[in-house]
Image (cartoon, rainbow, N blue to C red; front, side, top):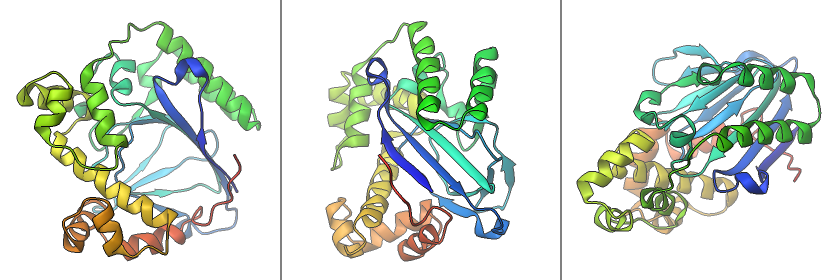
Length: 278
């Protein structure tokens, strides 16, 4: 298994892309039922590439199954899905900085991406199709990253990027370690609270309060995965939950299971015990 969680893009792209994640795991001979990974909402807006086997997206609440395309844009997820890996599973995730996917896609409101994956080839001429073919043809991970770098550089160079204070305010929410009031965030964005909420919806597809809940939930979940010896009550207080009951509420809303059950499901997934190469 190869897992590279924090690959930096080329310097020119770092204002637009925070990092790449690459995971390659081969599970030949493992039954489909054992190739399931839980995927609750997180704070990312991403472009995913699947250069090897097809990945199936299974909606946890309804068991609806959707095959992913070779490359997909994913907006802000609000409910859990399960990913069913193929036997040769390779994924590269492009994690955009706040507001950048909105700009990269021509300022299309991200509400149109709510709860679904969108084939990235639908937003491009033949360039994305050609990139997918190139990724399939190489086994060199560094070459793959360079190909994606080059594609995104071409995209960015064609755009007039309009960085606004609201994008900085969203970054405070996403990357900070505490909660902020709506009035304070609107002030940082140089907007009234009503204007802030409208522009926020265009960029993230939901209101700021709901996004803040997802950010806090994901922070708590990742803290437990990185520090398994921490108890849930300590995590709840560290992540600004009023008490454990409020943390439990968010886990049931977003992961649809208890905190301990989600961790157990993650650890039993094909990449649950990761080998890390940086």
